[in-house]
Length: 211
Image (cartoon, rainbow, N blue to C red; front, side, top):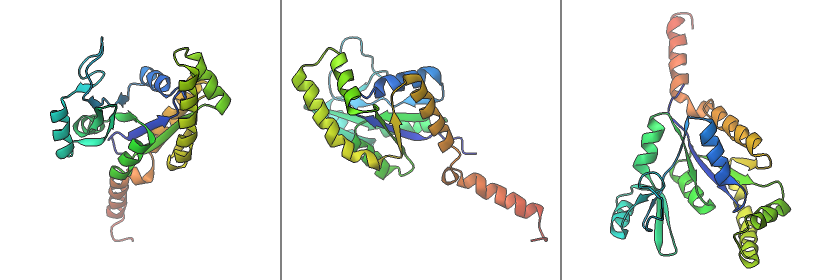
């Protein structure tokens, strides 16, 4: 079987719990690596280079773009954010399944570059639950919550581009479901062409002259 890791993109509505889901998944299983993004924004208090982000100047980031060193990138509020190719490929080659937590447009860019990428979309069981979770944070105004609900309605149109829909109702059940989906992907025939070719050749060699 192919021991190389799988590239996974996780997206979801703000308030879907995808960040919490990723945390409990990585805490429970040791075969996952959460991709670290590069950014041009300044580190916040307590953030560490190579742990939270790779911090780069505008000039350094634009050189990375020019050299095609990013799997995907975007610009938000005058800062660049992107996924460094070398870090991801190093983790994949070591056998880790690498998770990118990014929005829909970035996910589709990754899928275009890497067609075998597994796309997972996280959603609460219904719109009322999503709104209740956003309100429950206690950190956002009603106007911000309404704008997040509006954005969720727009993002919902992109759900059918994903491979699996993850309904986040119970966090532990959801975590285990995601783990099962990813592990089953390792057995997909299209991911094991080399192994299949090998066993075909062995069988033919074993039955040489009988076929």
